[in-house]
Length: 347
Image 1 (cartoon, rainbow, N blue to C red):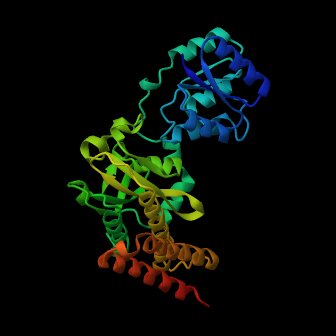
Image 2: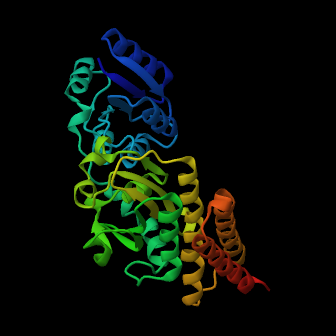
Image 3: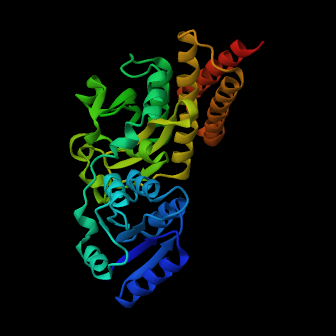
């Protein structure tokens, strides 16, 4: 018996398919638009998705790209339902395993039987998401790719390792076919010197692709990540990463903590990464704008620097008296830097 997600914009047709599937012994969950389809796929973890070309809320292709871009759903087989050849071609190109005419019941059920979730192996996030021109423009605008190490960014990875107690921390920027380490603490050689890996060795690509936090206690047991070469060659077992954003909110990289042993990440761990991500975004969008003599818009600049101050203050509050003198000085330096930016912005 399979658990099948029926994603269809027509309520009557969705009910008919669900009834037919249940009669054949399948468990059925349903979604009626593109946003709902991803949420149900994440929560229900179906064995296969039946995705209609008539899906509402942005369309079936949008839903399929979201499913393929999210590390929690990327390995779920998708059978597309479409009457027209052009619609089938579009959905197959977007990542569906098969496409059948919904009126052909025998073909539909034969397609379902051919799909085995464990047979799918996704080592990399979808290229069309990672190489999206708008995202790439936002990344390139930071001028951080292949840039030298800088004290401001290294301060962030040091804080991650000491506050969270993780042996390794990275600030990564995800390019079309690689991830570049703007900063790292605790990374083994040769990766620490090379400061980059191919995306075959990247968990951070999935943070960017899904534009959301990724928290994994043991990647060796994760259905998508377990084939990633970072496990075997970089010693990544537990991973917690937060997206880093550039202009217009595009995800350009990740700030992450890594452990070589299984680990249950705490809410404080994730909150600290989230707050330090705000600090990175201020550095990326303000400091480099000043250096390039391209003064950013006043309202945006004030907001970005303000969020960075808030993030550093949150970390100080979270750890209180437990925080060491060295970490306190690092956080105070962040506050000083962002206060300096705010002074520059004053009329």
